[in-house]
Image (cartoon, rainbow, N blue to C red; front, side, top):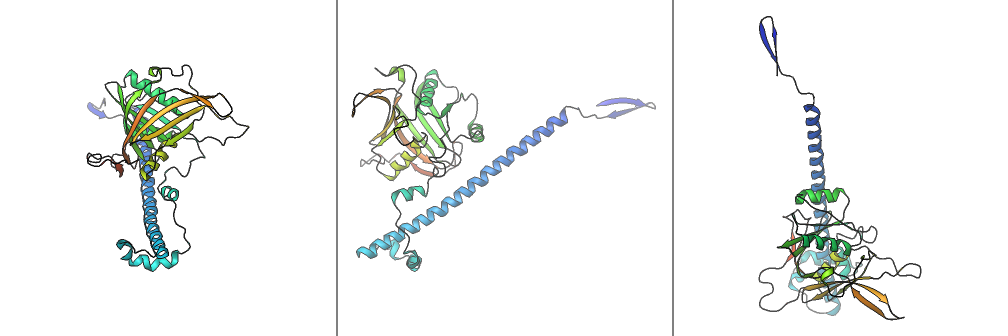
Length: 334
């Protein structure tokens, strides 16, 4: 505000500060860009969910047609849900040439990794909950060394939406978020971009590298490891295997020209508890090797698989461990 006198009268003039207008324009432009990006992500998410719903619907119809075909071939009575489906009987004559879906093809219908699997190496972000303890920070460093193409981020005060937005804009493929309770790592959340899934594991018996007796000291090899998955027999187990193996880059075919590599990462399922071990090996003969554990060592138990990314709390729950799941009869899900 500027006051001047003219002809004995005071004239009040409001003058805009020269530095405020560009700042306001920059702020409005930044807000518009952020809104456009959020709308684009929401549109991509709706398109992905629509295409996924169509694939799942086609998979259900194909499964019914396969059961109908096998019943007609074997002469066994039809399931009531198939026998009473008039539209299925009507359309069956047009589906004679369609082959039965294998287990892998059924999993590929809901495969979020199919487009870039084996083409582009995953870029994984490893971070922790806010204000981590020294032990959790050390554990995050060791997880970073376990994943050859991963990067570690000191989270600071970043909230989850900003963290996910920054990771997606940087072209990262996955986020590994580590949690703790009083200095003990207790949970690991693995989220895949851009549309999920997000898998949550509880952690037990976590042992860091330097706490393992007789472990290999010195610099950790960051060669692409050989992966071993043992004991995953169910559909849920195969789903967990698909999520875990895609945070590791694929190895090239073993030939005489390239190196075999000396790292092994093992995921062994024992009654729904996934034992994780990290070893290196040295050849001691033509058909013998000697293993040495590197670490870290831990036990993982999956308790939720949810669609959507890390910050999306309203995603569809694909599977979760309910409070009555493991009572009464003993049942293994993986």
